[in-house]
Length: 356
Image 1 (spheres, rainbow, N blue to C red):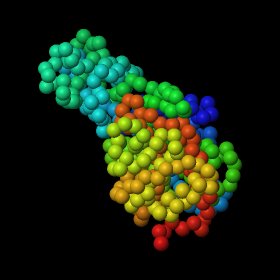
Image 2: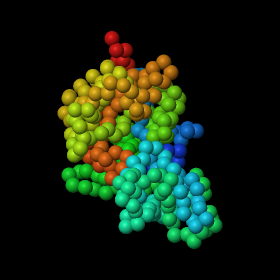
Image 3: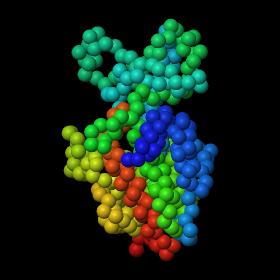
Image 4: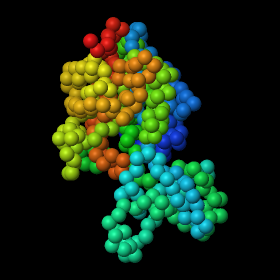
């Protein structure tokens, strides 16, 4: 991966952006895409849209990658100065105790730790149970409630204090790869089309959407606003190349073997066929996932907007989803952007997406 792209990815992933508080990530996204777009806008929800028009009439293609991440919110401060919190999005409570966190306050980030009773003092039955969110708290080292309240407000968001690191074989790990990598890919697709300079038909709209983790909200409003002919969500998908996952139920998906192209009721069959054909002709590795119902991603609401949108879902294989150590492949990110850029350049004004 070129250094400039990796630097953008790292900044985007590490920018704190729990659902409803995405402004820091949106700022990073806007700064990057403004060099490649005809226009960049931010709507009242917080979605950032980068538009690039082709030289000929053609379909409007909206790419969506949500930039919000799971996190927590300050809920209560007790008299001793310990902070109690609630989850934002789907949190695995097995993994919460013992982490450092950064509380995003109006005065800047404040470091804290999630405390729990030492295992030495637990009863046998306590050791076997998952900690309840009500029993966990954050210690910032304050003397009392008054000291905390001078810096921290109810409703302040917080994130686990871990960033992006490289592993072996072009793999990376971090919190929030779900779905900062989607926002990264839709931005990189825009860059590739702009820098290649090859003419394309229609319009590309690359959107970093918000509030996906709490109900696909940003994609709902941005799809209605842009009214695309084609809507493609870029998200992460479950990699099954790790111990303990039943491939018979989830599918055979590996990190590093290319993007996952979803197939099912949520996916327009014409768009699916064009994506797989493009991958084959471009010699881009890809994997197929069967999804018999809605995908639970931005693709779901994109498909159902207005009179219907020809939707698709491309996913980045991800291990350990919704943990602070999500793992994806840089090669998969690059191949996804390549696939999407070729797909868009192959579209024409007479392409029909009616599944007959």
